[in-house]
Image (cartoon, rainbow, N blue to C red; front, side, top):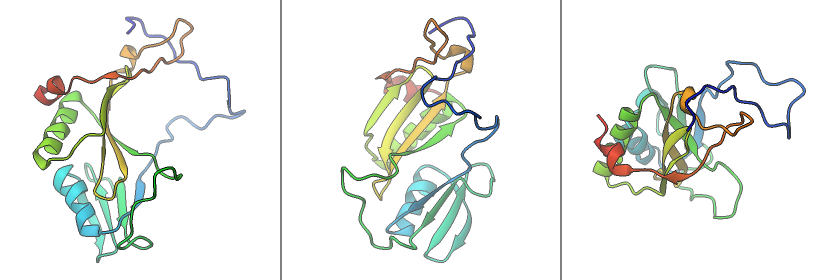
Length: 175
């Protein structure tokens, strides 16, 4: 890690002639699920999202902190369906960003209490992340970002993310 704040430079490859506006962000993710109750037991029961609206057994809209919805779940095209086969295209994972390391530690404790197995856990330098699957086998990343001034950068100022082992004991003990 570096002690100085270095402006991050975008990669020259695939640079847009007109970059997207500052402040643009991902608003929500909408997942097809096989069983709405089962999906709600994961996203609300385990992770703690709040249901903002439900449309029978077909759809539900979930939030953290009262936003209209961060995650939408539906069975419109997937009721009773199975996960996509390995080697197919589609969503790799959705990322749920926690505001602090302590809250990510709380999420880890929730997963452990529910008996949910992690696919992996990494320290990326810019963030720490837990990787798992929901009950429909959708990839889920739970993470928190380090303060920008702590992000590792290369000598020329480019972001330098890595993939180091995350200390799960330290994270679980975080309060």
